[in-house]
Image 1: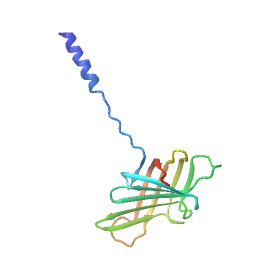
Image 2 (image 1 turned 90 degrees about the vertical axis):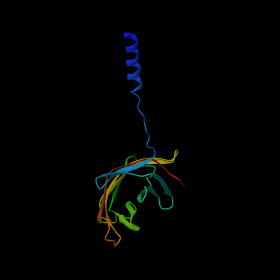
Image 3 (image 1 turned 60 degrees about the horizontal axis):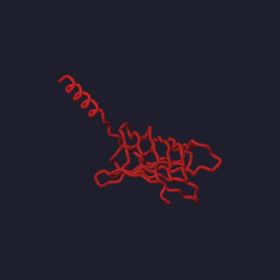
Image 4 (image 1 turned 60 degrees about the vertical axis):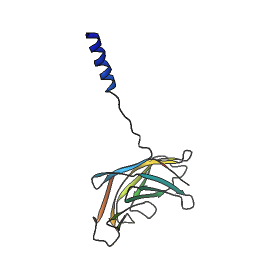
Length: 162
């Protein structure tokens, strides 16, 4: 009888030790105004003519866009792009509240932030890196905060679709 009870305890112990693993690849996520934010879908595009990469991440009512220069072949990773120093490296965020659109953007000499490109995989056509920024509201709308803050942002294996 002791053997049967011991066997049942062992079986129960091993059956309760399973763990479900959820993969989040590709992913764009970060901390927006001190709350966790994750995109439901994301994609990247490369404009060879202007030598830029643009990442677009969408959630239900929100759109995050990160733009940066395309790294040259001689650059080593990670490639750091400071925001607020020009129009090529920039971040925008928009969302809809009660049918009204709010738009936030970084710009030349106005805001701060950084996009770090850790990997541009031209074979598998993916981009990965990190971001953080502060952007001011550009629409004349009394709704919403005047500033949106993203920190601890990550984009991982976002597919390049062009």
